[in-house]
Image 1 (tube, rainbow, N blue to C red):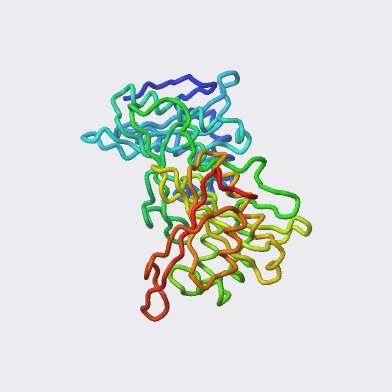
Image 2: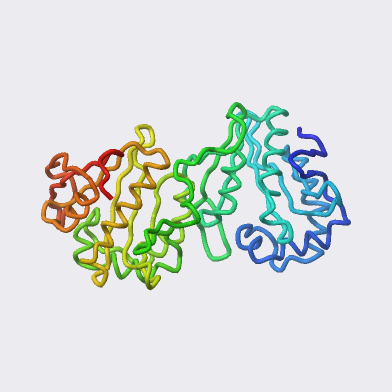
Length: 368
């Protein structure tokens, strides 16, 4: 069992007290806390907080878990909460969870608390800690990375919210994992963007759904999708909502291409990190009709390629259908070299198969 008080990394983890009632109620009534912790009462009142302090938290301890208030060591004021739940003794496993009050966010409180509690849990014999987060809760996933957890996958429909069920991102830390933050396969863009003054690339956001649906629903873009089926509006909205989560997991860097002069979305570009073990990623891109023929795609691909090699990738590859001459022109202008034809590689319409031309780019090949 972990100790009743843990003090490390600038935070204090201690037992809840009745003097925490008003702060607990205010923090747990916060819309962000409510959104990502749907099991909390709504509305969350001081009576709810009192129940947690007198009954809920003691029950967590009694069942082999832990429930701590996160407090400021200097003032002892409540900053949040952290705990262990769902212990599986025979596996040496538990789930770690936390929330941070609005007045304590963006100060590293959550990372400090998770690190401190994880170390205490490992010292007490736990071998594996799981941190489960709503896929849209990217702040929590950034805490997981900063606290040394690694992305392990997704549990489909494992979470529930007030309007249905949702997937949970699974982050795991083992007792013998190295200390410190987890190195990211795909770091954030420098200052949040790439630009050459003509085009700008930034991470896809939920507000991009309209433009990206218009782009990916176009017949000529659908023809190059895998499989060549028009996307639903819901699938594009989901892609935009989860872009940051998939970036943090090291799966893909999903980018909106903007006309730098107007700030409007001109197209999309995605870097799929398909082979981390070999340092290889796939690049794909498409442009809206009004942005074509202006060299914007070539500029965008050049910017992404430069960033990819800067963060340590060794090779980029891209595939096009043989008849997609415009896309091949973009690749060759950027320095990609044609490497071969894979016959029948991709699914085509009505059960057919289509060929794919493969292009590759090494760091020394770049021309833009």
